[in-house]
Length: 239
Image (cartoon, rainbow, N blue to C red; front, side):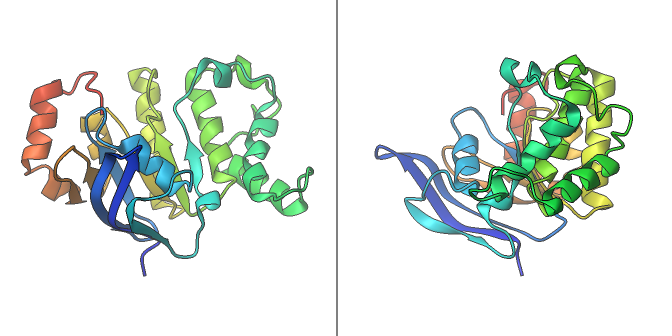
């Protein structure tokens, strides 16, 4: 049974279609890359998966998980980078979405945060200030924070933007490790087409017309892939 399944999903803003008739399904442990030009509906789909926007038609089905249990890593901004808290505090705050109305962390939530820090080897930096970390370290902390929401599904929006080549490779290795070793399902939006495709097993390509969903191997034989490579030259192409 699928962890998530979208059937003929259409979403609109004030009568204007932002996402048109999209279908895909993911099993636990899948790794899907979302591609598409600006305005193709990627952000709209993310809002739908997180339960922040309702569909105009079609439906999203969840099995064994709810939108609140999706670990979400949005694009970083200046406020996030300068957040005045320790690494442990930032990671633990990822439990807030599943905490209901209670203002204090439970023992279960604290154990979940500790588990995330162990997975990502944060013993040496757990007491450091988040604002004092490098960009790569901050992204690793924010991934750990997202994992506190669930160990089933991570939704990552441009997780390597602004990172140098070495740190980018490390970030991909980390995400791949969580997927392959810990069986975390990954949905990633990225403009780094070539590198991202090396790890993803499935691709969802969104466009104003038809969309594509299938294996990475199948995707690389399509006109969607050719147009992405030719149009953006795979350097700074905005997906």
